[in-house]
Image (cartoon, rainbow, N blue to C red):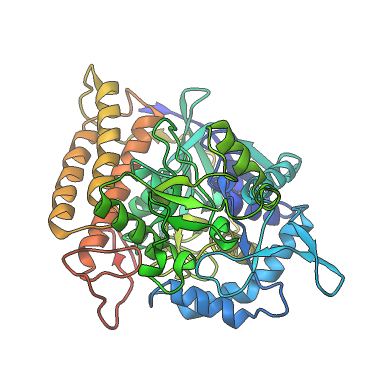
Length: 540
């Protein structure tokens, strides 16, 4: 047993991307907030988002059009009511972001007035993407972080990893199950801590780190999905992991560099090694088809030609146009010896976005009282079988607004619990070579997921993958966290849990739809439904 350092707050927010930061700033005028970050506060998937945020700001566009484009991209599995809810609330939520000081690009319109420069991305029928050059995520993240750092009601705790949620039953409190806080591993102090909270919000991002090749930063390891599942929350549609079709293929680059969808929106072509375009062979929308179609087309051509990459070419546009629209990407590629203005850029797909997640309602509420999940960690019904470009940051903004209103209305009126709780979790024997084993399992699980649950799958591979994951889980459970604790072990525990859930979802879906393509069931079936997994400790 370990005695724990503990502290308390009104609302504990786990995660520091657009969803978590927006919620913290909306709640801070009313409550004491703790914002927990696995690393420095600036690091999140939001920081790396190049594209923008979809919202209707053009008089020639319409909310109905945004809704229909989203539904088409979701291939029949979007919840129309949720899509409508988000599209209708998009503009005022984006306006809130503008009011915080986020500067989106503007231009002189044909009417002679200055308005926002709107770009078009795959799946959208109109120009409706607000952006800040090609670093929208960076602009959003740094603006919100700056506000959070200077707000007296927001306490930021960096380099701390939420281990698990604390439930009322674990504290001997009778009545309906509710969340009471979280156990936390503090890297800096090398100790386990406990945070009690009246409400807990998971804003941890997705789980694309389960794959060997991903556009996501290292912090995105499915922690929130795994914690919510262990707490008794249902999850849904985890078979739908989006592979961004255009990531830089550069073997010496350890972190795949995303080549924003806006490149294709501004006229970039996808070409074979011989320079010939190929997307029109797969879809009438060509380069502007949704991401699942583009990724499969690239994968198909790579396999057919037995090559490692295809190419993205925007060099037919003027140099001034390219540098004005994509200044940061241009510089990054130039540093790697690649000139976006003069040559096709080698690309291949990489894991990018988790369309499924923890099941929530319109306010971000989960199956556990006082526990919310917002952003990529959640399953709202917006994305269906495939996410349309630039709806992800929008979902973060709308659900942080909606969750804030619900928390203000329903936060429980309880006194903070101030007891010296103890840590008792795993038991087992510790191997002398455990660090090497943890690293080996960590690399194995990501390799297996990339190999067997990638762009194209089959039942035999998925069943083998399931068995391999279960074997690794059994080995992980032998480690005694009371004796040896590490961030890598925590992440491995969550990666294997989420990988198992993803594979279970994939095996349940006996069809190919959107991001889930299986060669054993290549066609879509009628009346398809979301894939829902129910944990053994689920309480209705």
